[in-house]
Every structure is written in C-alpha cells, then in structure tokens.
Amino acid sequence: MYSFSPKLKSASIILLVAGLVLFAAGYFMNHGLDDAKISAMMDAVHASGHTAPTHSSEMVGPQDHDSHLEHAKLQVHNSPLASIHFVAVFFFGVSCCVLFFYCIQHAAHAGWPIIITRVMEAIASYIPWGGAILIIIMILNITHNGHLFHWMDPELTDPESAHFDVILFEKKRFLNIPFYAIRTIIYVVGASFFAWKLKAMSKKVDETKSKVDYQFLYRWAVGYIAFFGFASAAWAWDWLMSIDPHWYSTMYIWYSMVSCLSSGIAVIILLSVFLKKNGFLPQFNDNHLHDLGVFLFATSMLWTYTWFAQFMLYWYANVPEEVNYFFGRFQHYSSTFLPMLIVNFLLPLLVLVSSSIKRNYKVVTVMAIVVICGHILDYFNMVMPGTVGPYWNTPEVLLLVLGSILFVAGLFMFTVLSALAKLKLIPTGNPYLHESEIYEYPF
Image (cartoon, rainbow, N blue to C red):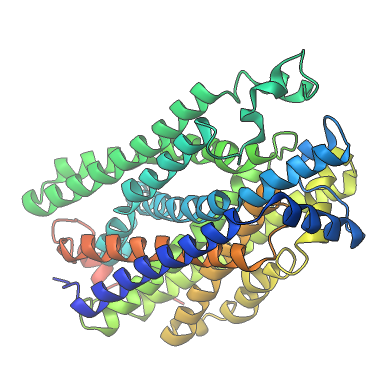
C-alpha cells in the first residue's frame, strides 16, 4: 500500500500556491497595460517587419488603425485565460489518454501491464478535477469574460454587421455557444463517469475475483474506447482548432491526441519508476520498463508523423487561409515552434531507439520528463498564437504561463498521489496478474 508522504504532499501544495502567486502577479501586470502601452507594442511588432497574421480574424473586417488596436487589446488581455487554457486542456488530455491506454490493455487482454493497473487508475483520477477547470474556462468564455474563441462574437454572424464573416456564418450550426457548452459538459462528465466506473469495477474484481465481473470490466473498457474515440476528436475541434475557425486540418485530432498519449505514457513511466525505487512496487521490472519505453518511442514517432504530414500538406498547397497558420508561427514563434521538434522527435529517436537503453531507469526517466516538457510546449504553440498573437514574449506572459503550469502540475500531483494512496497497488483479482509478474520481454 502506497503512503502519500507529508514531504510530497507539501511539495504539491507549494507548487499549487507558487502557481497561484505567479499567475496573480502576471494577471495584475497584464491588466495594468493601458491603450498607450498596447499601441506601442503593436507598433513595435509592425516595425519589426513581421506582419504575418496569427489568426484569420485579422484578415476580416475593417483594417484601419483603430480596428488593429482593438484586436491587439483583445490579444494582450487574452493572455491570462489562454495561459491556463492550454495547460488545462493538456493535463486533462493526458489523464484521458492514460485511461484510454489502460482500456486498450484490457480490451486486448494484455498481461504485461497488469502490475501498473493502479498507476493508470490513479492518473485517471485527475479527470474530474481537470474537467472542472475546463468547465470554468467554458463559462468565462460563453459569458464573454474571455475572448479565446473568435466565433463567439455575435457580430461576426450578423449579415448586417461590418464585421460579418461568411465562413463563421456557415459554421454556426456547430460553432454556437449552447452547443459548445453542451459538448464540453458531455466530454467532462462522460470521461469522469468512465474513470469512476472503471476504477469501481477494477476494485470489485479484486474483491470477488469473479471472471463475470472481469468481463464487465472488459465491456466498460471497450465502452470508454468508443467514447474516447469520438470525444477526443470533438474536444480537439472545440478547445483547440476552433481558436482559429477559418483554419482546419484533418490531421489535427490525431496530432493533438497523440501529443497527450505520448505524455501520458511518460507520466506512467515516472510514477511507476518512483514507486519501484521507493519499494512500493517491487514487481515492476526491466521488462515492464522496456515495454513502456517502446510505447514512448512509438508515440513520439507517431506524433512526428502527424506533425510533418499536417505541415507538409498545408505548406505545399500554399492556400493563404491555411498556410497562414504556419507562417504566423514561423514569424512570431520561431523560438518555440520548430525547436520543439528537437525534444519531441530528435531526442526520443536518438536515445530510445536502442532496446537496451529502454531498460535503463535513469535514461528512460529523463526522456519521460523531456517528452512531457516538449508536449507542454507543443500545446503552447497550439493555443497562444491564435489567442495572444505576437504579444507573448513579455514578462507578464512568462509569469502567467509558468504560474499556470505550476498550479495545474501541483493539482495533478496532489490528486494522483492522493488517489494512489487509497488504492491497493497489486490488482490481485485480475486473471492476468501472474502473467504480468513473470513477464519477460522475449528479445
């Protein structure tokens, strides 16, 4: 039985508090920026020669100085909500992907990962907490206390308005506030229900050791796979891709999901190795680590494939409404956009390609941390250009982003370790437990 030590509990609370303090400091600095300061920031961006738009809304409607300034003010004051939004979506996605990975193993009747069943269940325990943050963000957006989603402005779908946008008018059957709110609630409540139900069924299997109960666990796992397949695609549209509603990609749902899946496997590695090194999970061995390393390597390569396929097709087509998505990132996010390929692709390729390296606890742990950091940067690049635009490289945005990461990471750590302390680490009722205990990679 794992015990959540007071030292780790204090560390997670310190992260929470430090995140709140940094976020509050960044928030007040951001809201202290007046029109004159924002106008100066806008003029500096234009004077740099980098004038590529980072959002389709910059190409629609009046193009005079006042209109540009109004848009710049919205972008600058988007920083607090955008900062917490990308971190919240990322960690929620990570937890949901871990539950998906867990269900895939049950559906495949895989024996090797049964030892880490409770690890995956503990990580999935974050889902309702992460979902609550996203519900709050949704409420702020639909009440127009946030401006992350351009399409929520009613003027854009009013044919009589000077800001009328015919593309958004055609998409308003899907992109409308009531339907968006309903979908968000479905994603959060549905994922939270499955996380609770699967944990409850797993516990029941331990108590009864019944094959009938295990069959029900299998069925619920298949049900979550089906739910996740639709929901993960739809929340990628809603929470990420609709930030710039003119732009769309058929690769985007896979790209955003695989980013979280790779990070989720990295989190499983970190927690499993932590338990192993502290004597709580001695059954976890080099063979289990090797297989998790294989999945970390494979998902990193899959992420690279989806990133490149999306980039190549849109860049080669050179359609202004589409290529603008990348061109704006090249100009204004050059220090974060392409360099993330180093940590998300090049390092995993060079380090994890060796089978023997995947059995090295220190190397695999370091790579897991690298992958998580790399994909947080990936989500930063998904959200910030379309919401904050070129006004991200400022002290207040740094504080907001750092504060958001520390706060959500602290909440994630506290929630997961608290849940783990309430679980029996070895699922003794699972019929494949013995196979997992004696598992040995055959090559």
